Image (cartoon, rainbow, N blue to C red; front, side, top):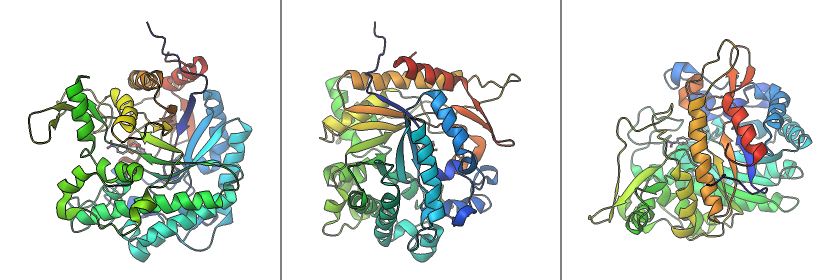
Amino acid sequence: MTSYQFPDTFRWGAATAAYQIEGAATEDGRKPSVWDTFSATPGRTLNGDTGTIACDHYHRYEADVKLMAELGIRHYRFSVSWCRVIPDGRGAVNDAGIDFYKRLVDCLRDHGITPHATLFHWDSPQALEDRYGSWRSREIAQDFADYCTAVVTRLGDRVTSWMTINEIACFTHMGYAVDHDPPHAPGTRVRRSRDVWQTSHHALLAHGLGCQAIRAASPGPCSIALVDNPAVTVPLTESPADIAAAQRALHTCGANGGILFPALTGAYSPALLEQLGEDAPIVQDGDLETIHQPIDALGLNIYTGTYVRAAENERGYEFLEFSDTYPRLNMPWLWIVPDAIYWGVRHLRETLNRPDLPVFISENGCAAPDRLTPQNEVLDTDRILYLRQYFKSVHRAVDEGYPLHGYFIWSLMDNFEWAWGYDRRFGIIYVDYSTQRRFPKASFHWYAECIRQRRVV
Ligand code: PNW
């Protein structure tokens, strides 16, 4: 019998992102991001919701940090808003914007919580969209690096754990998709698939130049990570044949072959390039070296996975569809596949040949149709069921010796879930948006107990 005990050194945390929680969209010199514009456009988000107020975390961060301390986490992942720091995307730095992050970080440290700052979580400055179409232009990579320099110069005395960019595929491929009009996220519909791959290529360049900028600006040693959401291939059975199939399929599943592969190996996956043909992005001399920067850690956002088995076809594998009744939580894509965490981590060693790269789960969690009871409780047993299974998968990876060092739950509190607005709740703290009151859910107390006992309870 296993007790699912974790080592004392394992880091437990929670994650959020600037546009999803901060609000204060026009305060202290902040100018619009593409998400302000997109969400203010009729028909783009569910119920026309915007992040203008969100969780009002900008004003309530002290109370929110107290809740983190109650939860018992020692690590908190948040993101810095580019257009708060450099409102026009390039040029003048807005000290008032920086000051908010200084206050937040100092408050975290006063509570014994280590800050992990993501420099970009989808909220590109609108000014750069107007200037050159954001990620459609190569120019954004240098502007991002300059923004990294501005932040790290000013916050590097109190933050040493940096993440460059969150989930490249989500804000490029979903924003610029060829066949969606309007797209699911801000972006201009482009003409062909190659133009979509070009936007993610520019984001990879931004990551690479960003890494160099952070290292150059940091006053002391720091840790730099990329955060990716790989499409995790999970072998249907753990037979050698199905495992080999899942390894081969990793290249062509989702956008892995054009994002995680170049970032970690310095080359686009040959299998993906063959599949893309004429639609492969244009790669200039030196780009792959820039993209393939040394990183200190990799953050994986894993919510679900894709089952794969060996097949007698040309590729040697097949992807399996989910049936209508396969269990999922409150998002169309949120099939419950706990083994995806274990396999996501294991693929780094066996499929991407990066056996020693420290990794952490930078996001995992689920949306559930939470309701406040008359006693002001939220009895989210569905979320606890989900998390308990995924924690066991985290434990398996740690137990088998993979370098998985920590876990950040998505999310600390309910927040602006992008195109789904406030309708989908991912928090372990319930937010009553009419009063901004916070109510820890049953899953909050459950997670607190896991952290206290360092095991899956
Ligand atoms: C992440 N998928 O996005 C983001 O980093 C968060 O900002 C977001 O709130 C959270 O997950 C929940 O959606 C994802 O299709 C978007 O598998 C799509 C997928 C996964 C994560």
